[in-house]
Length: 276
Image 1 (cartoon, rainbow, N blue to C red):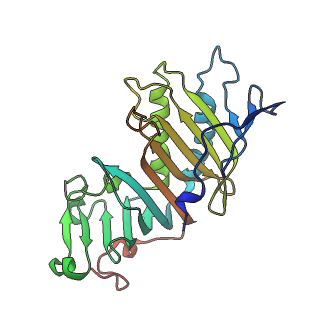
Image 2 (image 1 turned 120 degrees about the horizontal axis):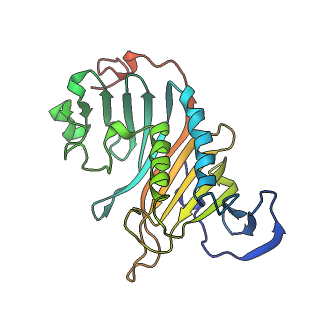
């Protein structure tokens, strides 16, 4: 399990090294914590290339690598602010299949024992879910993915889950932000860690809030061994009352096992290994 408090970044740069990094236009900066050696990732030709383009290129390399993934199993951890309330960290086991879009979730904590299934093209394209304990007495319920009850603890519907979809949303965001003249700062952490996982991290941030910008800061973690996206963090804008950017979204995938041959039975509430 990822320990969330073990790799927070100290945003204050300790010192700027004079040595120019191997990448043209990139200066190596030393920072504390596990996202060490931050590089200012700059356009190769600022006159013809947007500052976000180097980050988009690196993210696209990871995205292209996900095209061969037909299914995966993993531990999925999410932290979200829904409305004005930060939800408890949710940890669950996930089974995911691209075609047809199929998701099985088994909650570890909180809501231990809760199971959720979504199978596009079956069950009226509705979520099937059940609780445990007293709440479980009502049995399995059916919900529209974007219904208020289904979205009570989530910012996005279950149909947006998955590592490829997670990265697609970041690429979409950055391509939209290219249209906004807002002085984006792009940093690259080539030797970061997520628990014991060696990662490279892309970070984008903006000095001021402008129309067309949803987040003050975005971080994308990519596993160096597999080149798969494994975490996204999104931070809200600082305010006079709260000058420290507040985390509003965090999605983490660990223990990823790809192309394990998941079948319809893995997304069937009648599966004898499930408790529907």
